[in-house]
Length: 344
Image (tube, rainbow, N blue to C red):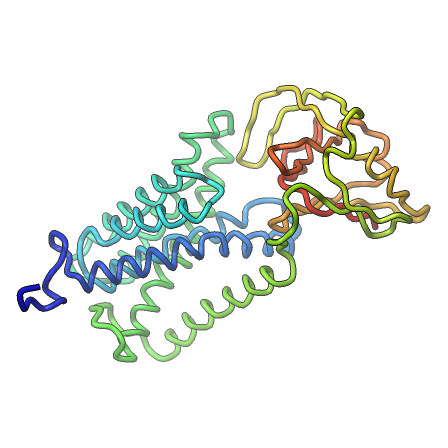
């Protein structure tokens, strides 16, 4: 490199060291995005709600561009990291597809805008940057997909994301940067918090990691077969089945997906009644509840009697996977990528 110092040679105004830091934050953040999703499902299970945790944890998605911006101290570092993080998530097969690049880019831009409000790093700028960046994902997805969602739902979800961005994004990033600076591991100009704040920030990060780890190991089913699902629990004949086992017994129902933030207009769905599959498994006489679980751990429960009597609960084939369509019921009771049906 002609004798040039690796810390002084860079792309544009970024040094090699800064680009490496941004790339590292983007890589970790992109890889962790799915992990944060598992953690969200765990929270949904613990508090008994079918939605909302994704926005409650939205701050963890923008933690990485905030850290990159703080570590480098460069305007534009948040945007660079956001774009790279979105590309990593997309290339790793993220469920949002290429749209996640746009979502992450907007978040990175807002991180830079928020941090530019003061010439010196301050907690309040990190909080503002985290708030705006985390809430932006709701509005981007709303603009692209959810045109039929009531404004009150959009504002509610954006509010959850904003609070998460302030606490799990801005505040946590500021304290983690301060902890690194206090330990002599970073040249970040972020003010160093006292020991109590440092331990609190580390404790929050470790608790979240532990919760996500539990979910990953104990609940999520990453290695299940894409083409089949299981029926178990209080049944006389547990079975593993695929859609092809029931071809010829399909019915068609007209259904509208009206979920918490997702809306799909009414259209016909063709699938196998869930009651047909359950009859083959023979639930025991004492059974009264049915739980349907997706591969990511999301689950819903129904009265077994209701499902056995209602032909609008159908399993629809989507590619090689199964989706539970719950007829005229709330969209929060629909389950994608069904892997387990448990009778209780």
